[in-house]
Image (cartoon, rainbow, N blue to C red):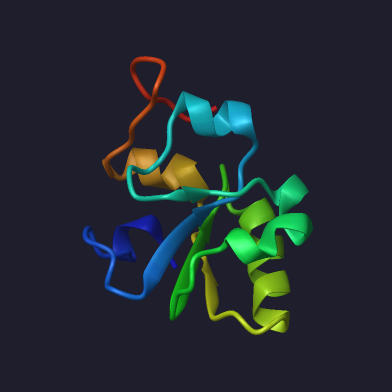
Length: 105
């Protein structure tokens, strides 16, 4: 799924799961995203909010594709966000950061 195709207001029962590392998250992320780094995913699966649909995003779509395949193989209904946060930012979707002007790292 392309970033532009994700509804501006996530539908009830959906979650945007950002699997980038902490420094990437801190640089800038989608306001409604839930952060769970790919490197910690298996140990923290119980932290994924219950959702009918999980949109998985990283920087460019590679890590999120792997996480999407893993989640789908283990009972979630997950969709990869192609182009990741690079595409999210390029398409003008909102971003936030705790450390000033948000950017994709």
